[in-house]
Image (tube, rainbow, N blue to C red; front, side, top):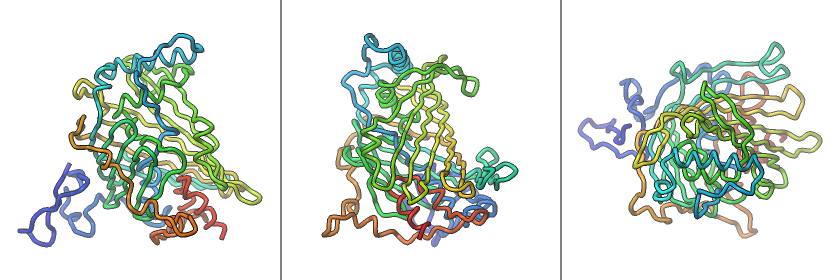
Length: 419
């Protein structure tokens, strides 16, 4: 990972220290080394044919895959090694599997010794497929296979993650020169993007999904401590126990509004029978956008394969993985149905624990987050940054129809389409 950017105006000038390190591959080709385009290039023609422009595709990727959250807050228990008696059989089996996971991850003592964490890694994202219409990609539908990270396509970047227990975290992620920031101060989770002012997520502060992709074993154990075991399944030739967790109704209600209802949010953890470690994390959530005459539904499914565990200070941490995303919009006439698939691969370059000087002040939200006008309304909702979303050329729907899975934005995007 490159931490310094060369001075592109003067050969004898000082290098710039990068806030977020970026992969060496972005400097590999001399033709890419310009101030305007210090980024990884892809085949833009196929993406532009669907999303209108490469900027729109990057906005889609960052909005969906950049910093998603887990369904509800994780209870930080005093002891993560709880009794398994006096519970229904499905819950008792889940608690036993979680205990085996704790042991495989390094043991309760090692996990409890970690107060804070830092991770730095590189990522590659791509919108791999778009389909629309009656057939949803079959004979009657309109499907376009764009590209895949497996053949080298994708937008490349890096991220830096800071976390301090119980629920303080902050992430900065840069993809092809576009940066997003997100975090939680324990009371509110927020996000800031180039096309949107800082805005808070509805409901209680929730943890970052990326942390639970093998980077924070204690939070994984606490998350699934109240789950149930629903059976076994083979994933990529790995036999796994499957644990299931449903978001609590109170959490779903807190995340809903008068126009957007979070109907369900479910998480599955696939724990290897061979190693005891988390092998795959999957979650899906369904939103309903209330509209006169015809409601619109959004279903988002994310599957993360968690790989390359290495021992750091006695704790097993995943250093690589791959996430597949399916984003499905339905509920209107069949012509309005769309499905978009995205992929992300990531590798972890650095991990460290118990960071000195990392205080709660490091996780304060941006200053513009809590701006309120005299009438008590959030002015951020009215002050978009003027990012104009282009139209999809293969379908009459705009790319905002695909992108707007953020619960706070959905009602605005759907209203824009109706006007």
